[in-house]
Image (cartoon, rainbow, N blue to C red; front, side, top):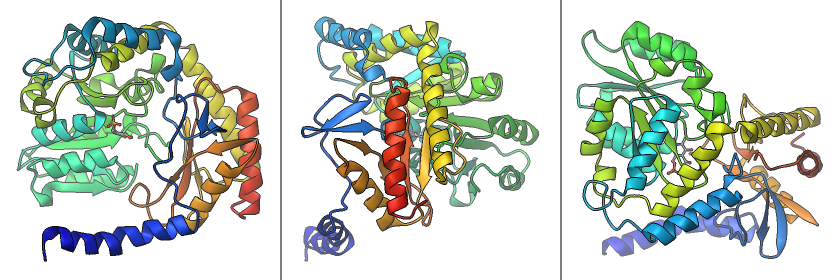
Amino acid sequence: MTLFQKYEERAQTELLDEVNFAKELGLYPYFMELCSEQGPIVKFGDREAIMFGSNNYLSMTTNPKVKEAACQAIEEYGTGSTGSRLLNGTMDLHTELENRLAKFIGTESAVIFSTGMQANLGTLSCLLGKDDWVVSDEQNHASIIDGIRLSKVDKKNKLIYKHNDMDSLEKSLKKIPKGEYGLIVTDGIFSMEGDIAKLDEITELAETYGAGVYVDDAHAIGVLGPYGRGTAAHFKAEKKVDITMGTFSKSFASIGGYIAGSETTCQWVKHRARSMIFSASSPPSAVATVLAVLDIIEKDDSHRQKLWANAKRLKKGYLEAGFDIGHSASPIIPLIIGEDIKTFTFFKELLAQTPRSVYTNPVRTPATAVGNELLRTSCQSSFDFETIDEAVEIITRIGKKLEVI
Ligand SMILES: Cc1ncc(COP(=O)(O)O)c(C=O)c1O
């Protein structure tokens, strides 16, 4: 038997049975083809859906100035960089973005990567040595988990604390022997349930136990803190966070990732992070997109304020209808269902509505704990209250039908 024959068998039993089962029930929810831009209303084929499943928090994917900047960058710089940042792949645009980001976030320096996943993989794996300790929230994003896996940290030095639980974090920190080095890693806004890390308490504990702090602001940059400067700015804890990581795939309406921190740390990462060194840099249009979004949000906080007003409206609608929205404190608002099949049925029913349906993200393990299956919904700044109310009305109707509420 060859590896691929073995794999065929494995795929059949482990994956395809599950996929086909879901398809037969008409509940398979993945890889749906969108036929429009990622706006507040999207199209699947010729059918319209209210987009409640996007990370386009500031609705910048369709902003005319942003689109124009991306097109202009293609005209000026072409379509691709064709190389690693280390060699031929650094354009003046890349350096400009690093400088602008550092200034925006309030750090000495920043380094950009081609995706946020690569930023976490490359940075965590090159910062953590064999004898270091890492203390990570149990609900951190997969890219953090994999970045830690890629590092040389000894298995016994990897500590997972209960989600946003400061007692559990402190217990973990106490395990770090005197004279050894620890790093606390947390999402800023948690990606599935929309709650916010208790960064004020985390940074205090870090000070007490002499640990470093690494915050993944993928969902918080552009959303939290004055002008969207992120979780540390929200808690006025900028000086207490060693590294902020983020992505351009959400509020920045592009693709790419970054870390921001001290000049020395950034130099280390630039010369040691394998996901950066051995991968081509971001295309000029992607970088110019982020620069154009920065141009807007540095001066104008209205998109973010609209986003929060919309999130407040949506949250109120859900709570009045009786949904369990967990501990959401951000524009990511989950509807906790607690069961696989019901979650997928809810998702499909919402999409089947006419004349307009609602697109949400069905989430199951490993993205959330078993028993906590949920529909992840999220706001955009460009929604109007009418659209939000329309979606809440549809969601409430289906929620009642499926006895979720
Ligand atoms: C918390 C978090 N970190 C990192 C990433 C990875 O970002 P990217 O999409 O840029 O690879 C994501 C993306 O979903 C995320 O939610």
